[in-house]
Length: 249
Image 1: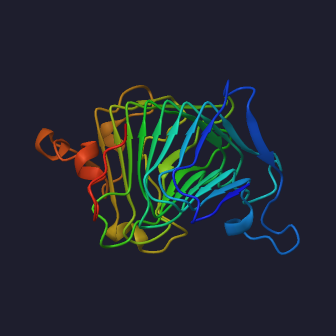
Image 2 (image 1 turned 90 degrees about the horizontal axis):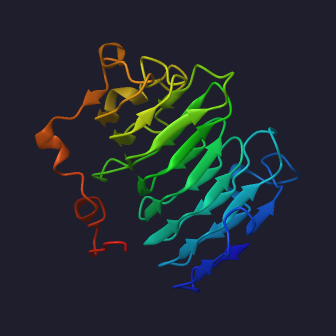
């Protein structure tokens, strides 16, 4: 399903997120399909809203396979499920602002990735493999990348070695605020990307993390713990200001 750029202000509302399911089974390597074209749903039209739906890529653990790929600006996803394995949610464009609230997102490797400015509020993030949750590719001129407010991180019981994220590009920005972290999160928290130097220019931070997955003293030395003063800038108004003011409702 493609919502093209000329189709703006589209709203998709399901009756129940567990029973209203948009699914497909493409994946990178299937014919000429790449990660970027493996989506079940692609959103390019601005001011898109989805509620009470499931976006699913049902191809299984076959590599990169995107359930929801969002390029549009001013996107709101409420009370939805995003289901896949590797690369479930692609928040791709650096000009895009996206807001996910009360959502369930699951996957294996880098299953929340891309360059957009994104807020996740009260979301449940579930890992299905010992791997990485986020892979931000924030550009140098963006003030914010991924921000998680009051979220919950869990995993399948057999998995105990999950990183909060790794930097897909050098200026990756990811911040977790008041987030519950189960024991699957590794004490160091964050990882480098394939032994390159991306992490030297990243901004990875936390404030108020809690649960067995948060061990402050063992977090990697190039990550940050926000001060109360630094925390004040993390508001929806500041994060989504952009070229034109936008405050999701």
